[in-house]
Image (cartoon, rainbow over all chains, first blue to last red; front, side, top):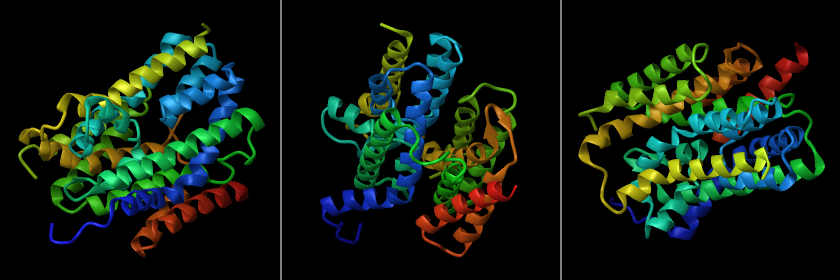
Amino acid sequence: MTTEPAPKRHRYLDGARAAAPLTIAVAAFGMSFGVLARAAGMDRLAAVAMSATTFAGSAQFAAASILGAGGGLAAAVAAAVLLNLRYGPIGLSVAPVLLGSRWRRLAEAQLVVDESWAIARREHGVDRQLLLGAGLALWGTWVAGTVVGVLAGNLVADPEQLGLDAAFPALFLALVVPQLRTRSHLAAALVGAGLAVALVPVTGPGVPVIAASLACLIGVRRR
Amino acid sequence: MNAAWTAVLAIGLATVLIKGAGPVVLGDRPLPGWLQGPLDHLAPALLAALVATAVLEREGRLVIDARLVGLGLAGVAIALRAPILVVVVVAAVGAALTRALA
């Protein structure tokens, strides 16, 4: 630490700004979730409550589609929990930058999603202000998108017609490249991606990404 | 209470606990040393897996479609050191055009 950190407020705004390129895609998928949830028989408030509390797109889409297809409550909950298990290790990695009482840490941890975590990653650990600023911006956008979706339907055409589903892998790629700063980091990335791809056809949703996180064990005894 | 609300509450509660477990259990203690190496490698492992699944997975199957074109163009933009906004827009426009033309 040789440089004076910028004032805190500005750093939170920097986080929100870093999330801005994603807001169109997040809002559009929030709307889609609202539409899908209504079609799956969820009432409007339930759909919005899910976006506000679960705040994890893939788990929400999986749960709503299973409910809509008559797959049953247990299957919907199990799929969503499996898809969100990766937030266990991710939560652990952000723990050092969350502050205050246990309740406050619990609340702050809810702003962690793949995108906010990826945006806030720095060489050694996570930047608190970027994480929370980006997380809050993404949360607001996701919930607002869902509200519009349950009230008005899909204002944007199909998000996939607009190519918005390609925005997420592109973002993750842009954020992983600077992480590949040593051979062991590159190895972790290749093993992680390889495991995930290999497991997609043979396991249920969620499992490939959890298994891929085991590639981080390459970092045992390395810094 | 109907199934939808039960699912909302169960999934919401589970997610809150999963996300919060590490920070709550650890409190203000530092991360144990043996965890620092693995957690330092978690970002490349998970982000690379998210790239792979977000571009190839569709309903539990591996599918090659317009997303891959978008990602390829994004890779070019990244190599040219474009800002993230440009990378994301290039990917979306590339995928959208591919679908429109296909």
